[in-house]
Image (cartoon, rainbow, N blue to C red; front, side, top):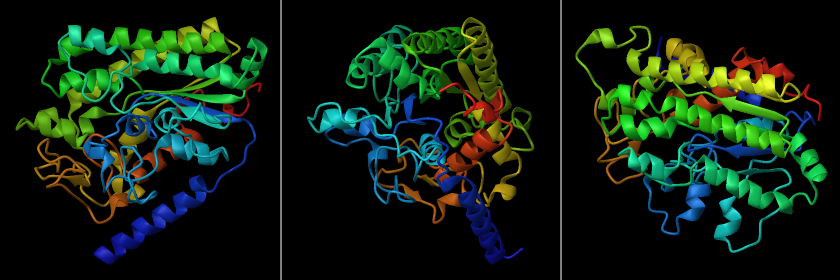
Length: 380
C-alpha cells in the first residue's frame, strides 16, 4: 500500500475514534474527578512546583498536538484523565499546585482536582533512598498527595456529611501509581529479584490509601494497573539483548519485564478484591492498562500506528530513539512529524493517540473489572 494510503488510513482511524471518545457525553453521573498518581496522570503539578521549568518535559515539543505548548503533561497532548473528563462532560482536571504557584488560595475545585505528580512513587522517597534507590524528579509520594487532599477537603465541605456528599459524586482516579517505584530501580540496573520485593509494599500502600479515601466518603474508584513496561523504548534500550528468546515475536516486547508488570497487576487485583469484600457498598473498578496498551502492539495497523512501534516519536537517536543524553525536549532531540502514528511519545510515556485508545478501551471495551458500564450505575 502506498504511503498516502497508510496516511489516509491513520487519519480515518483517528477521525472515527474522535467521534467516539472526544465529543463530550454529558452523563451527569459525576460532578468531579479527583486524581492521584504520577506522570501518567499529572496535568501540571510538577510543572507548577518548579519555578525554573528546567526539566526536559517542560519544553517543546511537549504539548504540541493539542495544547500547542508545554503544560507539564508528559505527552504531546492529552492524557487518560483528560479524555475521561471529556467523556463525562467535565472540564479538564486542574493540577492542585497551580493555585499554590500563583500565590492564591485553593481555587475552585468543585469540578475536580488533580494531585498526581510526575515522578511520584507509591512508597515514600525516604524509604526508597534507604533501599539505595534515588527518586529522580520529586518526593511527592502517594502519602503526600493524600495529605494535600485532606488539607484541601475543608475548602469543599464543612461537615462530614457534606464531605461524604462531595466524594460520593466524585470519580476517584487512583493512578496509575507504583510504576516509578520500579522504573527508578530497574532503569538504574537493579535486579528484577530485588525490585520484585517492592511489589507487596507498593500494593499495600495503594490499598491503604484507597481504604482511607473510602473512610472519607469515596464511593467510586477507578484503579489502573501497570503498563507492559517490556514494550517501552526506555526499557528496550536499557535491556537490549541479542537473545531473541527474550522477546515476544508478535510485539517485540521483552517478556521478562512484561511478566513483572503482570505480577504487579495480579497482586493489585487481589488487593482490590479484598477491599471490595470490606466495602461492598463502594464501586472499585480495576482498569487494565496493561492489555489495553498491549493490543496496540499486537495489531498496530488496526489502530493507525504505522510508525515503528518499538521506537519513540521524540528522542535523541539510537535503535529505539531513546537516548538518556538527549531526551525529548533536550537540545539534540527531535520529534516525528506525526505523533499519532506512534505508540510511544518519549520512550517512557505515550502519545495522545495512545492515551485516547486506552481510554476508549477502558470506558467502552472489555478492559475493566467489573465492566465500566457500572461506572454510572453507582449510587450517587
